[in-house]
Amino acid sequence: MDLKKIKQGLIVSCQALEDEPLHSSYIMAKMALAAQIGGAVGIRANSVADIKAIKAEVDLPTIGIIKRDYSDSEVYITPTKQEVFELLTTDVEIIATDATKRNRPHNEQLPEILAAIHEGNRAAMADISTEEEAIAAAEMGFDLVSTTMAGYTSYSNSIDEPDFELIRRLQSQLRIPVIMEGHTSRPEQVREGLNAGAFAVVVGSIITRPQLITKLYVKETMIEEKKDE
Image (cartoon, rainbow, N blue to C red; front, side):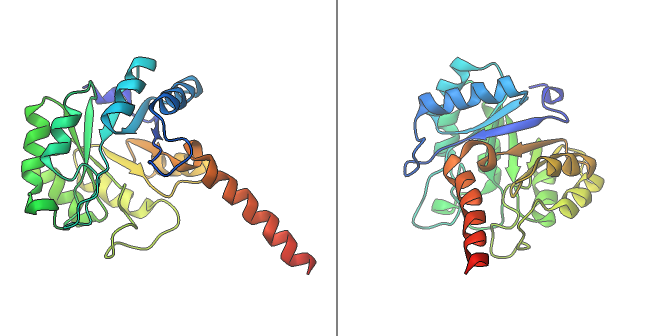
């Protein structure tokens, strides 16, 4: 894939898990179409069914993942080779996987996952939480790194906004693209991330999860109620 297609652009994560009201491949495809109309340069999507529906609806580069829980690991984003093989049945251009230092299901190793992605002729994205993990992923041969897991592992910095400092450090050290993802809730944070050196920015919940967006507004009504008491 020509990564220039996503450079300096917005990638919209169109995902809805089984317990969410918009869980539907049809709805995610329409969400992706809305993102394309709005100017997105790429889509991040979860599951084979959603990816196939999205690919039939829009002509944008897609980052594919499969979220799956295993009892013997905290890793759930494309955690094993099995998920990679499933994603290879789609036309997804990039496959992302959790590249944190945590143990994987069945004690599989990250180099095995990377090899499976590259053997399928797809670009490999490492979802990392720390500088150490990003450097290790780059040295291992990943094509991109993303800050997806920053703040979501027990040992990474607890944050409520994108880790701009991490992006700056990685951009200065790595020769592969650094993608900003996670904790983005305001449009101006996208520009700040790009200015910090992000190759592109992935934004999800604040665009595609209306129940979470609604909660933000409802929270403000509660603040006003407290003032009136």
